[in-house]
Amino acid sequence: MRKVGYCICCIVMCFSLIQCGSGAKGSHESAGAETPVFCPPPFDADSAYIHIRKQLQFGPRIPNSQAHELCGDYLENTLRRFGARVEVQRPLIKAWDGKWLKCRNIIGSYNVNQKERVLLLTHWDCRPWADNDPNQTNRHRPVDGANDGASGVGVLLEVARQLGMQNPQIGVDILLTDLEDYGRPESGDEESWCLGTQYWAKNAQEKGYKARFGILLDMVGAPNASFPLEGFSMQYAPDVVWKVWSVGQSLGYGQYFRNDRLGMITDDHVFVNKLAGIPTIDIIHFNEQGFGSYWHTSDDGMQNISVSTLRAVGETVLKVIREEK
Image 1 (cartoon, helix red, strand yellow):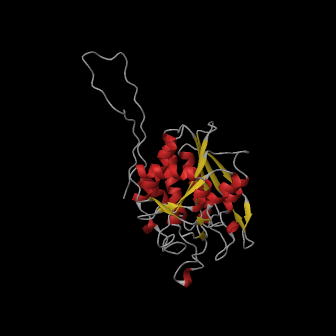
Image 2 (cartoon, one colour):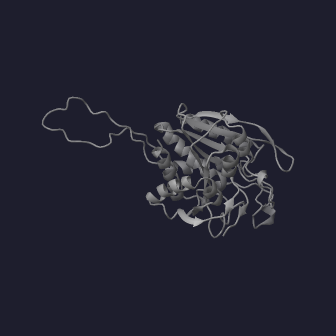
Image 3 (spheres, rainbow, N blue to C red):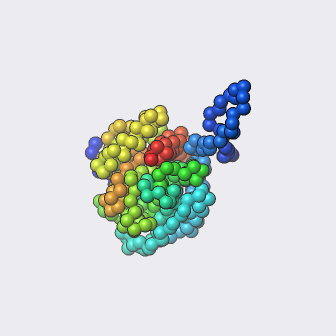
């Protein structure tokens, strides 16, 4: 990410079948036994947190590296384990600096026979250079990308686990995009960013692929995060913005889903809107410190991840999906 145009411990996860609601028997036995209803557990923010930490354990997820390859394998295998049909795009893409990069877009699909679909996406790669680091000696080193990259993936992997337990009424595609953060430093070259998404938008997994709408997650793990109304989201998909924000606020997360206006951010959703024609919004952290004092620095580690923020985002996205008919 990108340039802003300013307008302004051990965790045990339990799966259980429970009967939702109960009624006392009268003086006579009922004619037939009640059928238990499967109620999936709520969004598990601790699970999302573990997925974030696991990504960082591979090392910086920069293209053409072993860490990038191993983490990609982990993401693919996790989506399959959670019941998704997984497809992978692996093109070679030439970057702004002339380097050829091994791209890996990972798509996990649920309810695959349903024509009406929703797209959820986030990038999983890291910035190869900590170009905002206050220590100049760190500026040519890659970042860990706990918040900028891994947080969105962590949330969507937990969403995937939930969808694997109970299919949504609508089709859902989870797109983990690559090469988002390889953009040209200190330039207005917007097309040097989001290379994996640009490829996907021109070569979607199925010819003529369409989704009702899309939701992009970017930097969704910071403590006391602030998600304002991003400019391109309001331009291309205001109805989707208000749908998501109203759900988040109704769940009691108004301190995160704020009605403040934000400038236009060049992020993956821009190319999904422009190239794929899918109305897509960006849930992205931004406050008085911009994207955070640790953004594109060597300090973007697990200390910048809050389980409370992950829960707010995950519960909101999951409720939006489950309410779609």
